[in-house]
Image 1 (spheres, rainbow over the protein chains, first blue to last red):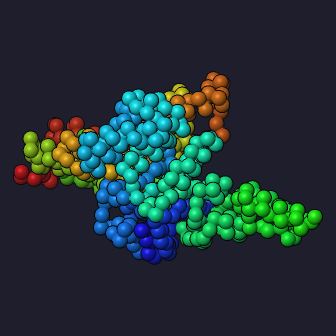
Image 2 (image 1 turned 90 degrees about the vertical axis):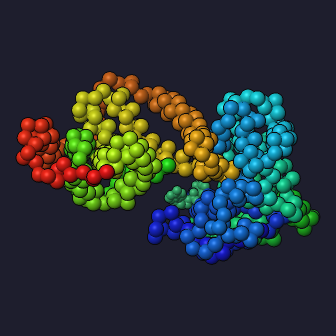
Image 3 (image 1 turned 90 degrees about the horizontal axis):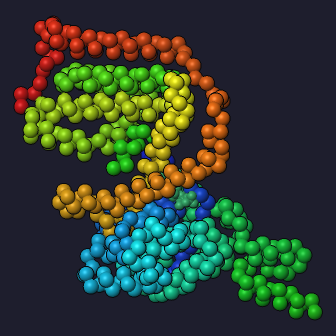
Length: 275
Length: 259
Ligand SMILES: Nc1ncnc2c1ncn2[C@@H]1O[C@H](COP(=O)(O)OP(=O)(O)OP(=O)(O)O)[C@@H](O)[C@H]1O
Ligand SMILES: [Mg+2]
């Protein structure tokens, strides 16, 4: 479990980037974190694996205060995939890249070999195994970065803007992966600007604006509240925009729809009513 | 590690130092460096150092400058140990002082001169535009690389990298996962920038005009004059007095620690 208690943070004294953050993340949840550029999303998630320590308040990961431990220690529990894969790839081969984290955390030689093979396979990279990571395409590098973090099987996973520069197929694959990670043991925190992706991926959505939490609830409810979207500089999902257009003509049309199923249902209702 | 770059991150401020022409600031920085190189006695170096402090204060950049010195700490520690071991502690101290003087001179320049003005100054000094441009690009990318270095370090630490682990050799090796991504992404960026420059017709005309021009003002002439005097005085002391008439110099000039 992750707990933010009255967390405040500033990079430069007197310029708070996070204020009064109170947040609890339970296993079993896929949580989305959204907010405008510079809202403090990256800053917030860096507190979870101790890269940043709160200026005021405290952050607990499984009841351990992050100030009492190191990022290397937390790396066993918290996996963090950064936005840009090029910021983490460095090894001669894909195998060595995946093995890096495992070795740092002291896995046995045998276990390292097993996991490397397993995770390269999982992300469809086995055939490049002995090749240099720098020869991969952008999307492949991104997947390798993901594999090299996931191989340690962290209970908590943080993905910072994983859909950036990914084609529809890669997004669908990522969605699959997220669904497979959704179980009673794991917490997944997804930082994104991609409304359409969030609506399909997350169970709970948190909105951060100008360093403060302004909303926390079901994606459906939040993404259909124009005021919140406006503050987080997000466009409503297309289907919600559609619903608002419909409601102008047919006042009974519900505006809180976000998914395709809900929209179809609403349209059916409307048609039935008019028949 | 990234702290050292902090010293060179230009910030626009309305101060006397920022208002000087880049050529003036350049001349001042070079002069301070030369004077720093002329002497290797503790007290003269301290004096050079103290004479620079007001300028740092004028530029309202004390904090950044301090960070640059922090970045120097490892190197300074190294010099201190090696020199005290092979020569003397006194010599080690003066070497470190010299390092601090040089660092201060350069951070004074980079903290108060906008990279664009710097390029303009080079062109005024008849350096070909391509070189001036390359130089200002290099300076401009320092902060970018600094920020990137921090991100890369964060990313690798999230994968369990511990920089402080192991003996000296191991500690150096610990930096490989940070250095390689820096180099690779710098090369990637350089290629991108080159392509983007060419696609915007870089170098298509031989003679360029510029939107802003530099001009020396009264304050520049005043500073240039003072700096020139300081340089002449230092050269005179170093090459004439110290060599021909060392007895003219006060005792404190040669003062050193007894060990
Ligand atoms: N290393 C740093 N030093 C100083 N200020 C920083 C640093 N990193 C971020 N900031 C500032 O903190 C604020 C929040 O930045 P952060 O990166 O957390 O935003 P974000 O919500 O992740 O934005 P984006 O959507 O653009 O990724 C910004 O105003 C930024 O300028
Ligand atoms: Mg961010």
